[in-house]
Length: 513
Image 1 (cartoon, rainbow, N blue to C red):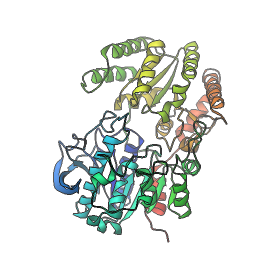
Image 2 (tube, one colour):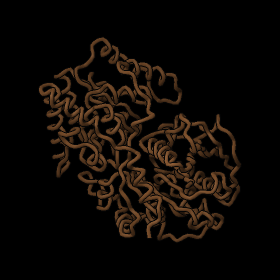
Image 3 (cartoon, helix red, strand yellow):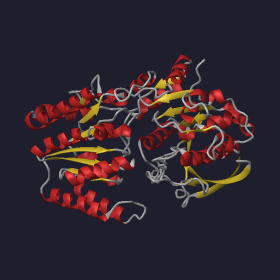
Image 4 (cartoon, rainbow, N blue to C red):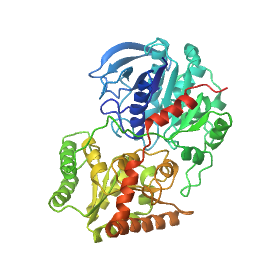
């Protein structure tokens, strides 16, 4: 029996610990590993809240900034129990939750500053927990995104943790654009401030563009035994340099990725989707679930919602409860440049789509929170257009209803490492309209299982997005047979975790000579 440790910022296997698709992966992959008879522990930060009903396991004494830090390890109750899976959180007063899903901080002046501090404490605490055997005798440590790669720095350079070198370390890239760049020295959040007595090789840590900084995404790529991208097409994309906005590729790390590829350490394996043990939503509750979510958000003091905006949204929903629209387009996503750059740069494109929907008594429903600029853009759109319903938050019931009850799922991502939303929509037989990039290209085939748009230039992409949207409406309202075929083909697609994790065992979890 192999013993795995998953280290991540999110884990949807426990409640209220998800901001994006990474949470789904960290929930589902361990379940597949468990089915193979192996053991998995999953550890995430507590964010000052997740430990509260947990079982205390151990104090973790760390040396940081030249002083003693004491963190605490708790085992917590999962949403569902599975054999050989244990869920843990690490608590320390400085590991706090941020504004985004009560997980990530939004630091506009110094991006990554606050998150870097808390993940530094978290990663060092994980190293200490491994050292004292808190997760048993481990074989493989699987880390996810830049939040966890400092563990590789600790393993490689910290004299107290040389014992970690005998383990196999796997690093998954979920979003290459977020790289965790902070100074090497002369800053409170610098590497040398937190590890003043640890010698290191700056060439193996530094950012190519800012050579006085550590790049934690680069550390993951350079120091892991295996590096994993979450779709084959995304792997191919990131081996090339970015040329935004037409093409988002390696984001300055393409040479590191090319090196990892030459060394046989880089693998593109498509994420799976869950086709068993998932919440089955009840049909017919879409608008009720929006209203329920609005009341829930109004009671959360931490939300920055204004009552008048929620009232405005609620009023729209009451109208659609009485007179349902004929066609519903939906998106569920974190509001970031990655997901909605096209609408931020070209709001006219969204307005054009809304006008086309108005002519057929259709609506566009968007659920999400994130970047304040994007939130503001979509709130303004909601006030200006009665058929744009923007619900600025998260609700599991509402998400389930959106995937189940909408006619078209729209994913105009600028780039997409994999994307899980399109798989969840297709699982319910909902065709998707996607930008042909990364994992979207691997999962949605134009006029076979959904719709795709692309273009050689930015303007061409926008033009083709509108053209394909016209095709969607034409088929839905005037060619029901084709629409039903698309729905049936979408529903038949199976991107199973079993297939993905088979590839993990062959490529990621097994040393290659």
